[in-house]
Length: 326
Image (cartoon, rainbow, N blue to C red; front, side, top):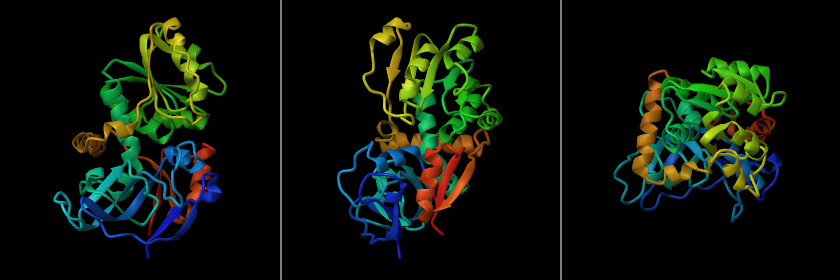
């Protein structure tokens, strides 16, 4: 019997309910999937709490998974039952053992990429791809600041940035996380709770600042991030872990050096299935080569989703976290 984590209203982790579900047959352009592994991401918390509104309940959250095609609907020619697939993005509904979704929303998973690795890296890995390869194309010799360097996105980013020849400054919350970030390629770490981030960045760059800051923290890091940038530098705000950014003062961009700021989202970059497959192929290649290793540091059974959310929100997790369905 298929099972899923459902929510009936926005709220805390106690709203996550494990229950049996009915799964419809795939319609035109759709495929049915049995999921082997599911990824946990902070965006799941945003949907659960209502920061990102849900229109209709009950609802199944989750944006990332990997598994096997079990059936196909009319008009699907790219996939057949037995094919290995992975995905990261809409439609939501990943917190389930089985689901149906559009064939255009998944990519083919190579045989040499395990299901758990795929579920742990698709959303975070594709996020890193668009951040460092498209939003700001990092080049060898660049120095970049990456907040939350020991998180799931951060650890992948540090390794990939090092592979590209960049120097990485990463912010972290503890000495343990600093060591983890350094072990994954981060050149310099800043303990944001006890150190002045902007001052340290200026010290590390001989006063120049950095051309780009990648910020998933949000509200608490906007001004410090801007103070880290060199003239005409770019702030890439891609998350809200400390709360959403409101009342942004565009005048700061002029005052602090003709700066740029952008709020990109993965969904824009993967809306084109062809571009999504190209992004995935590049991700698979850096993982295959060993340049990027995916650290699955937490594993939970799907029915323990509430425990996983509590761990994520308390910032006690490192690397990637997955749910298993077995």
